[in-house]
Amino acid sequence: MPADSSPAVPTSSADSYDGLSADSIARRLGVVDLHLYASVGSTMDTAHALAAAGARAGTIVLADEQTAGRGRKGRAWRSDPDRGIWLTLLDRPGDAAGLDVLSLRVGLVAARALDH
Image 1 (tube, rainbow, N blue to C red):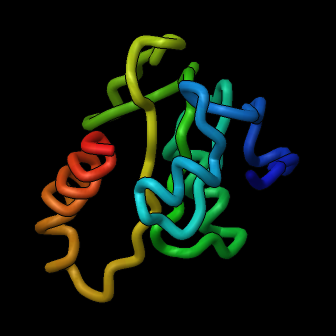
Image 2 (cartoon, helix red, strand yellow):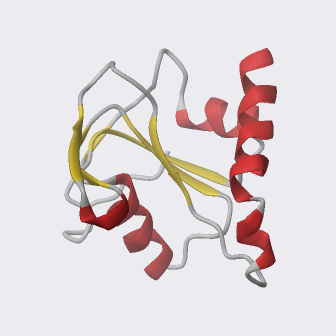
């Protein structure tokens, strides 16, 4: 698991999520990298910082808690610990058509992972 100490990523890292290491989760999901945190302001902000630092497409940011999450139209929310799966997938599609099926792609990968 990468240790992120950048001030642009104000988070606390975690050794495991639901008893699994970051490497184990990444293998199960078939992703290139997974950054695991106990708490972040926003998984999206953390993913943006990692992308700016050169993180590859397929990188996932997974946190047990978000303290400054936000959604459409700037709506803010808190994502409390042990209440859900808070994550952002970093993708770098070659064209806009890749975004059209992103939720379908993510759903299929999640379904395969849950079958394990």
